[in-house]
Length: 359
Ligand SMILES: [Zn+2]
Image 1 (cartoon, rainbow, N blue to C red):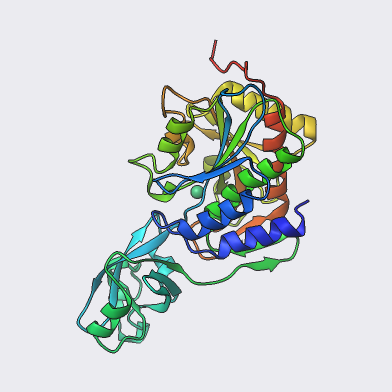
Image 2 (image 1 turned 90 degrees about the vertical axis):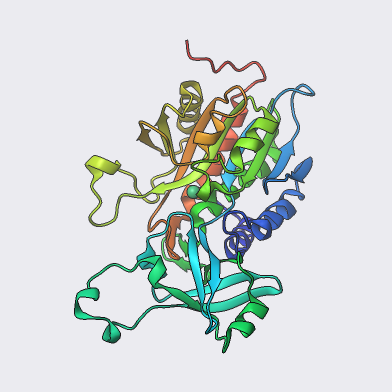
């Protein structure tokens, strides 16, 4: 299971605010942790952080383990005459989630607290009470008494996240914002920590990738990091919807249980041999797992990595998560431990001569 040092690291990662494009705080914490056991730790211009363990022949390509370190958030686009801030989402929000929340803005001189404002129900016209809120109907109140006062504290383009700390629940369950995908960034480094104690036959680079939540058209930070590494193979670690909550159609979304172990994707973004090796590693280690179908894209960094450079054989390991893209995402700690164990076992099954070409 995860030891106290790992849990302290996870908590620090979760608490550090880092919306897409502004991941410096969690990325710094990730690199500081990696310094304790990796042979080389560095950052790149896109905001990615890379930690390498060297093994095998010098110059041979590494395996890449990638977990995105950014989270969804929002950005200030306008300060009005009364000092209220108007904002746009960073990433895929349900605007209903914004209503009634406290926020933390990443301003020039540190974090600025605020609340999201909306007209009280009593003030709404009857027909508007049933309507879903749009982001454009909401604003942020930082307690400023004037436009000048707000502008002295906040600049256009300042990002923010919803406020709220981590909370442990019974049965090893953890609630927090940013679990998507600090848990992935955590798992890839946790796997590297375990491999440092018993080295595999190939080098391994764990990457905390940037900008995944806004990567659909750009490849985020994952594509340039994979292009730069030209890895032998890559495994992406992200979260996926646990479907063991009320009202989810399993016929449509599959059968994924919280605490059911890592979820291994199959589909065109996933290399068949990488998938097979992940399954073999899970079975050899006695790690329970679920298979998930991804007939088209996966909605993760895997989509950017498998098409990077001249193509990278890529696998996708997901951690079951409830209440995605809310300030109260929920995971089971044992799934994090199992995912890290699976990645380490996968690395031990590879040699520099591994062949991933479908035949
Ligand atoms: Zn994610």
